[in-house]
Image 1 (spheres, rainbow, N blue to C red):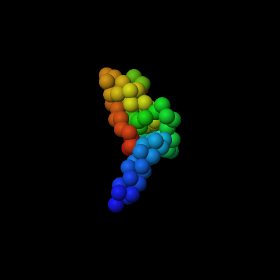
Image 2 (image 1 turned 180 degrees about the vertical axis):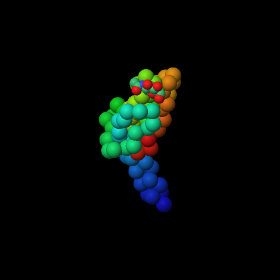
Image 3 (image 1 turned 90 degrees about the horizontal axis):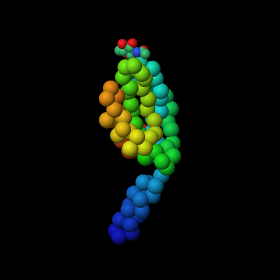
Image 4 (image 1 turned 60 degrees about the horizontal axis):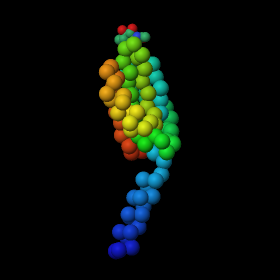
Length: 90
Ligand SMILES: *[C@@H]1O[C@H](CO)[C@@H](O)[C@H](O)[C@H]1NC(C)=O
């Protein structure tokens, strides 16, 4: 039992050390692009983001980014952003 608990804890720690994977796409227009591929994030990118930039840019993307950058998009007027930090959550 104790061994099992240790194994689970170890797996959780190990899993968090693995690189995050995010959906990736880039599109023109004001609707969110459909994911076209999967990206493995670098250590610096600890979040997956889905961002729509409104007029006048009219573009959208899904990709790895740092949570700080993603929160920046959330706070940008005219932009819509979703930030999350589990595999393929965006
Ligand atoms: C962006 O979208 C808005 C609203 O749909 C539109 O009025 C504007 O012309 C578009 N801008 C560009 C650069 O396509």
